Image (cartoon, rainbow, N blue to C red; front, side, top):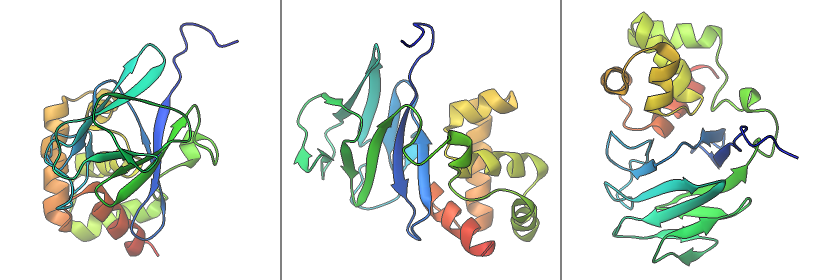
Length: 190
């Protein structure tokens, strides 16, 4: 039996455009949309600025569409109100699909689930695009799927400072989203 103090971690599991795994740990009040302030930024015309929000009620995970233009779909059905998500559900926002996962992601330990591999290639990528030391640290967490709040907590800086660095990383690399950044990073290190 699970210890009451130990909260189950939920994830979204998807793929980048080049079919690399994309694992996103979820936190309370997880926002999805095109806005830079979203926890999950999906830069697509089929995604609204403020598209959907996920939150917890105890151990249960819920999603609510925020009156998006193109809707939020769970297991192929457009949701109209706050909906309970279960392990294994298929979530579609715009053209991006994710599998909802409770506990560790289906294919292994979280630390092995990087969006892309990090190592010497990270430094080469950072040097190529002229990223600062702090931007390189933030890049590490971005490609692992961490949200702005968690990155700030890990680096002891505010989420606003993280956001400013993320915007600089996007500008320097010519990326508009985490998917584009991760794809560029992966292609650079191939």
